[in-house]
Length: 241
Ligand code: DC
Image 1 (cartoon, helix red, strand yellow):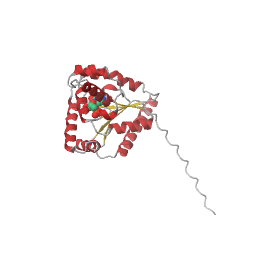
Image 2 (cartoon, helix red, strand yellow):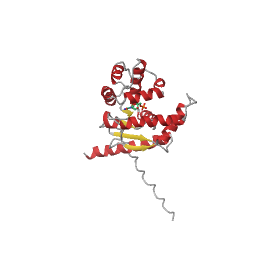
Image 3 (cartoon, protein in one colour):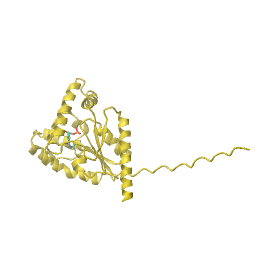
Image 4 (cartoon, rainbow, N blue to C red):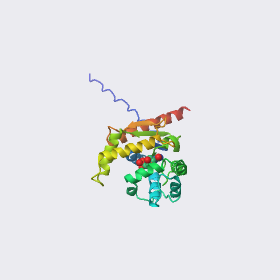
């Protein structure tokens, strides 16, 4: 008797991926890898991307260009009237001098209030007919988009962040010392975490991702897993309601 061949098990159909709700809010300290991650996620989901730190850098740039003082809120309020986001090339805004001035400008409450609508509008009406938006900064999950369905808080040890930033910056300035970059980052962290207005903090419902020991591609993979899980939870909760 020939043994009967068992029929192969019926494959279970793959679970369709849940739609990714918008906006995705990404916060965290300087040089934690937010920017690279936010851009990669926006490309992956075909969402629009806004680096909100660039807005503060841009205002700082305009203040300095006008011969003003970034510690003086009146100067920032005057500069913000001339703000045309994305009008200045990114390279001119990515200097240590602008970073330090941006941290001062970003601590000013009236200036932050003026930036609110612009950022919220981007989140609710993403440009270029994109279906969603990824916003990155310091207060996206807490103040700009507190109802964002997906929030990530990206962090890493300060020494590791300083090392990464130093590797980046020393290409343009080979004399730059790693200790200088570390001191500048510690000073910015202090300002960002301790300022009275919109301090940097993890929103209660933000998913934490520590990138200290992760390569860029692993940060992306880990974030994608967190986002897809969260999207599925949201979809399941909607189906139950
Ligand atoms: O992310 P960045 O280094 O480009 O940010 C520049 C400065 O702006 C930094 O000191 C933090 C501040 N910032 C902020 O206060 N709120 C945001 N949403 C984004 C940046």
